[in-house]
Image 1 (tube, rainbow, N blue to C red):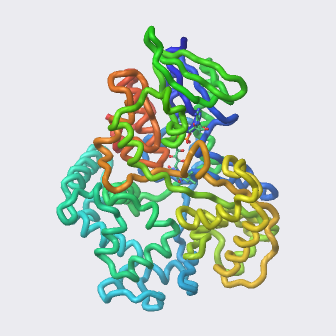
Image 2 (cartoon, rainbow, N blue to C red; image 1 turned 90 degrees about the horizontal axis):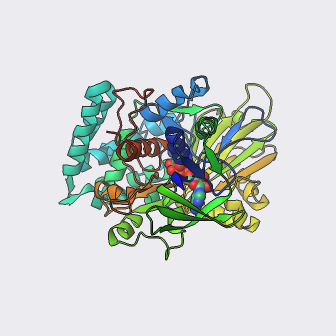
Image 3 (cartoon, rainbow, N blue to C red; image 1 turned 135 degrees about the horizontal axis):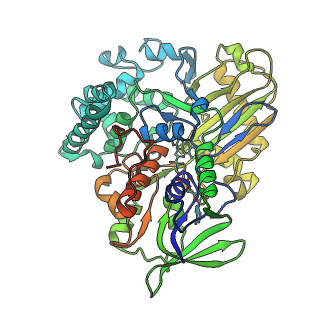
Length: 509
Ligand SMILES: Cc1cc2nc3c(=O)[nH]c(=O)nc-3n(C[C@H](O)[C@H](O)[C@H](O)COP(=O)(O)OP(=O)(O)OC[C@H]3O[C@@H](n4cnc5c(N)ncnc54)[C@H](O)[C@@H]3O)c2cc1C
């Protein structure tokens, strides 16, 4: 009998295992690798280019992750992850604009904006909506971003109270769709401009107004994103190495299919995979996405209560996929772009200039990063590879590559470019993920749902740590904060010494 069984070796499971190392803890993982939705791998023919198929960046204000990266000795790998550079392109309604034109609110935009909207940059339009939802939002966010330590912690607390108290037409903001607000506050064309130029499918994945405002508050414009040259997956890999070095055991090829209570106390876990086997444990930590828990055999799963089912329905899992293309030369430099991100209302939606050589040489693009409706467009072209294509990065279908290549030429205003040398496609909508990241649906109060889902069996030591059940859903920081909180409350682990004492955390107490 194990004292603790951790199921799932994504960042959540690896972090829990690392922090609990030294106890009788075992880690069980369905696949053959650690990292889950942190998945980094070299791209063929482009030396030094590690594709990020899952998460690729983190905010400089995400203190648990930033401090963990330093603690793991990865500081030399950190780089500023910039996008929205002035020369980047936005190709919308058939018009090609540079980022600086979009942000100047210029009259050249192919959108009929109201006079008061004309002077506003894209971010200004979003801020207008936020202000109407919650007067004082921008000032509170700027104040929080401008202070450190205890004042910053207090600023977050003040914001959270104000957001909870805010009402839109008498309704709390967790009941209001963000899209409803946008359409009420902005002209139809201003709302369309946000949607077309934003890179993400706002209609599908904006979530509730409360969720959207929190996400805006958590990633202030002043913050700035960071990435890891060695790949984001190195964080769970490093944690896992330390767990193993401390004597921890990992069982790969172990997919949890059932979970039962035993008569003598504790839990029986049934795994499918290389061989079927049962494992007994006194406590179970499920470090799994929502869809993976839904896939467990429901008859045997002891979570049946209405509050749990209500919680499961609260998350929309945003379907998303990435296509990387490599080229013998970085032809996009002819269009005056080498770094950052371009966006479009074409199904490519957003593309990132992943590795662009200074001189001649092979280059790589994150050529398609599509969610929502655009994801469905590409998925239809990808499916001729069969269902396995949805589980690990692999070459994309020729049809998909051809279509993407043609769209890239149109976006850059070029008629010729060398053919792609290689492609890699990763779709996160299949099992066991069921989506790339979760967002809170309108109508669900995260503050009420999270505690129920974290401990689905009231009073019992079965805890569910996931990027859904956190005030920062769909982020690595959210998972780490949730894990820390559970480690403290359930296992009485002290705060890690490497975590700055005045870290701004939305979850850790
Ligand atoms: C395309 C994309 C872009 C993203 N961008 C960002 C970003 O830029 N920044 C950011 O912070 N976050 C981002 N995210 C979200 C981030 O990746 C996740 O929030 C985070 O990685 C979730 O970690 P986790 O450990 O909770 O779950 P996962 O990473 O999903 O790990 C779960 C693990 O459980 C295993 N498993 C599943 N079912 C079973 C089972 N039945 N039995 C045993 N094992 C099982 C899986 O194989 C997997 O290894 C992005 C995600 C995607 C997909």
